[in-house]
Length: 325
Image (tube, rainbow, N blue to C red; front, side, top):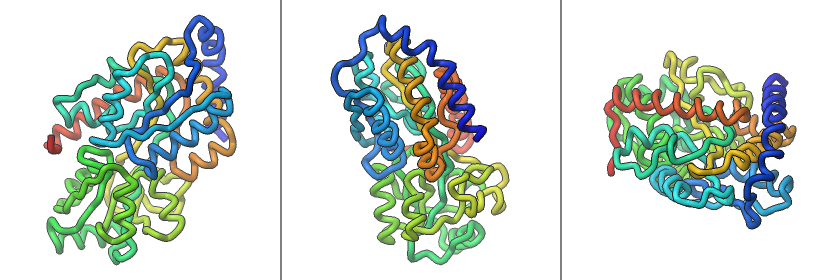
């Protein structure tokens, strides 16, 4: 209830700004695209579609989710940065494209702070450490023992080199003092398919994309990666509760637009997405996905992105994490 009140308050605060200022701007007359940097079936795609359906009804205008997978979300960000700043093309920004890539990819062709206008946070989720159906090590303690007994051979899938899932694995390896084999995919959907097919053994996967498969029993949840348990998985122990003090590796999602997006358009979208996030059926779906802390002002998202860039930059430097170019 507290979370809902905060979202509703945030929506009311921007309402006075959004609509009046918009009339001085050029609202797109055709379909609005929300570009997702991953294939269908992953967490970013799932949350984008929840928002798109509601905005389509609210605006009486098509809001289309367009998947442009590659380089853990970076290709989609590069694409949107070059699109017209008229509100017709938005990006479902992600920790990969807007917090990890600046440190991991020195030849990045965009600046996440200069080339985008933050609009609104959609949600922050833990990752779930999940096991394929054939696996017997179903606690963190047992998994550490398995990795120590088989150094460099226990396989962990991820949504790609340099993805949030990849860095969650690197954090685990550092804290546990183990070696494991990273298997990158082009998105969460393919990684989950291979996990369920026993082609790989484990994944640190977004709670958003992993939850349906955990609920169906196709994969097993070993741990979650925020220091507090998510409401959608109250029975799954955190990494901290299983001996990894301070282990916190989240995935987050938010809408941004190209760098010259007019403030009036950004304010209207912020207001309307806050309204969407306060809807009871949307809140229920967000809770099931483990997506919390969404909504709020444009400044909230701007400050959050700056903090994340600094945090993960330090992790990359301290852990000497590199990805293949």
